[in-house]
Image (tube, rainbow, N blue to C red; front, top):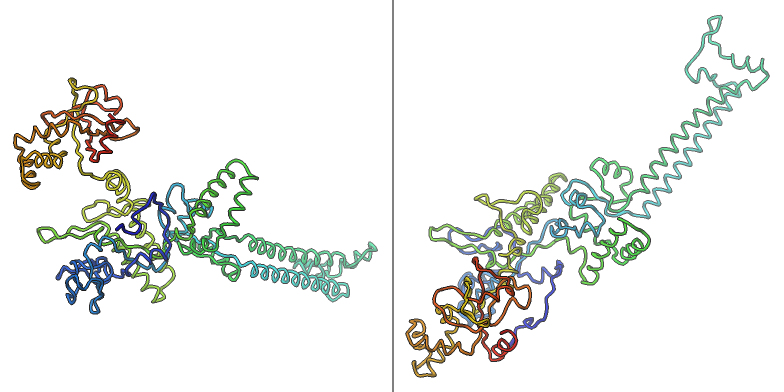
Length: 576
C-alpha cells in the first residue's frame, strides 16, 4: 500500500499561509527550555515537548501510564502525550505565535528584494521601515481628507471675509475723521514746528493739492490688510498642498510624523515595522496594480519601463501561483521537528546541541518579553525596540548573517541557520536529495589502463566482491559450494579462493556504469565491461578520458551496478 502523497511527478515550493503553518503544527511552543537537567526528559511546552512532537520512547507516554502498542493512538489524560512511535518526532512540527508580525528576510533582503519591488520601495527605505527607523503611511482616508480640505477652505473664506470687513470699517473710520493718520498707524509721529505732533498735515496738503485728504492713510491700511490676507492665503494653501501630498507608502521621520499627526491625525495612519508593511499588503489590490503597471510598460520608456516590467513579473508570479503578498510577512513561525535540531548527551555528561536550538531560544525569549511588555502597556519606544529585536532574531533563525553581523555561538563560530542547512554542497538538496548514497555503488581514484580495450575498465577485486556480493552468493548456492545464503555470505566475507572464480563468471556478461561528476552531458556516464585488477584504483582506457573530461591527477569516479535484466540490456545496447 502506497502512502498518500507518495506518487508524484514534480514538486513546487511556495509560500505558506499562517493557516497552513497552523495546520502543520501539533501545538504551540511557548517556552525556550529544551530538556530538564535533572531528569534529562523534554520540558513541557518547550522545543522538545513530547505533548507537541510525540513520545521519546516507542508506544509510551511521558508519565508512563500507557505503555505497549495496544494503546496506539491513545492520548494520555494525565500528560497529554499521544502513544505512538518515537519516529514521529522527525515529522511533527510546532509553531510560535509571534507577538508582532515580522518580515521574511528572503523576500525583504534578497536580490532583488521582492517585497521592495512589489511596494515600489528601495531596499534601503524598506529596511528603514522594517527596523523602526522611519514611519510609513499605511492608509489615507479620502473622505476625511475631503472634509478637512472643505473645512480649510471655509476657514480661508471666513478669514478673508473678516479681514475685508475690518479693512472696510477702518477705512470708513479714517474717512469720518475718527482714525489716526498713517504716520501714527506706522508709529512714526513727526514733531511740528510749534512742538506739537502734526496730525493733520496730510489733510492740509490734500486740501492744498485739491485731492483726497485721506488717500495716504487709506493706502497704508489697504497695504497692511493685503499683506495679512496674503499671509493667511499662503498658510492655508501650504496646508492644503501638504494634505493633498500625503500618499500611502510615503516615508516620514519621527518629527515629521508628529507634526502631521497633530494637524491631520484623522486623515491618515502611519506606523513602523513589518506590521505597517502587512497592513499595506493586505489593502493592496493586485488587479488594479497590474493594470497600472501594464499602462506604465506601454506608455513609458527607459528606466521607468524596466522597473515596471520587473514589478509586473513579481506580481504575475504571485497571481499565477495563488500566493498572497501578505504571506511574506510572518505572524506564525513554524518550529522544526526536534529530531532535526537534536540535543545529544556526550560521554563526559556534557551535551552537544544543534545551532538551531540557540536561534529558536532567542526568538522565543524575545517574543515572550514583547508579549509581557504589551500587557504592561509599556512606553512606545520600548515596545518598538523589542519588536526590532524580535525581527532581528527571526532574521538570524532564517538566514544568519544576511543582514549585519552574524550571531555567534560559545566558541565564536557562526550559528548555522535554516538557510545554511539548505545551501551549498553540504546542504540538504545537493548532499541528501541529489547526492544520495545508493546501494550497489562505489567510488575510487582512476588510473590509466593502457592494456585495456576501449570498452573495458579495470575494477579492483575487493570493490567488485562487495558490489557483486548478492550475485556471488546466489551462484555459490546454485553451484553447490554452499547449502544456504547464510553460509554463502560467510564464504564471500572470508574471500575463499573459489570466490574469485565465481566472481569472474558473474562479471562476464554484467557491465558496470562509470560516472564522473559533474555529469554535464550523456557521455558523463557510460557502461564498461569490468576486468578484475589488483590494487584499489579503477583503471580506464586513456581515450575515454575526453568524454568524461577526466585526467589522472587524482580524479575520482563512481561505479554503479545495473541490477535488473532490462537495465543490463540497456547498458549493453545503448551505453557500452
